View 1 (cartoon, helix red, strand yellow):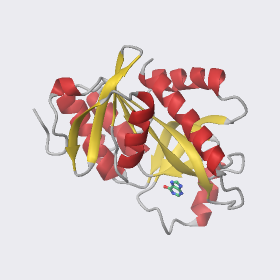
View 2: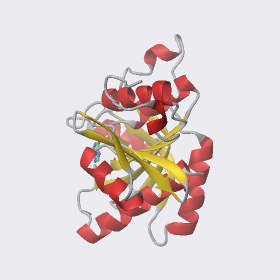
View 3: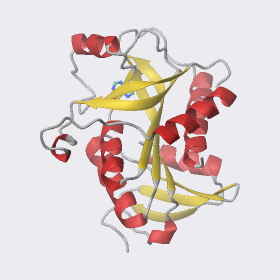
Length: 238
Ligand code: HPA
């Protein structure tokens, strides 16, 4: 049965989903990975693509921006479509000095200022962590594929605000080993835990909050987004 935001039947969606933020990027990823993919849903300009890679089914769709949007889609994918694992691919802002623009971050966990996970465990602070098997699969793929590109395996922070976050908290987060900031992973990890399913975010650092000097060249951008996607796909199909 279709859900309010995904007009597909349960069999139309693969057990593994690659989830970029942007619907246009989802289209480009699908074209690259699964050129004969079927569009199984197209609600609110968010096309959902399903096909096979080496005989293994894979779905690609977008999360939209921010935790509420990512959580809404993840909820429908887990609860109505039997999805087993969701791997977010996206960009993040670098926070720590040892992370440079173009690096890839496999997000083991995500601090957040969002209240989305607060009601989950009354009296406790929920730990938004990635699924270890997916972290291990992405890390193994990085060993084989990263070449000269640094791949970090570390916590990140998922924030509700893109603008106006205090610099001093960024410095503290970096001191706590938090390498990058984005806007979805903590919510995704929470929904995966709720449903007993798996989740991971693999991020390319697209800019740096403390050091604005190192913009990526267009060439770097493609190679390094490509690397994050390779790691995400390896985790998805592992
Ligand atoms: N915050 C700051 N910088 C960023 C983000 C973010 O969420 N994503 C990519 N660069």
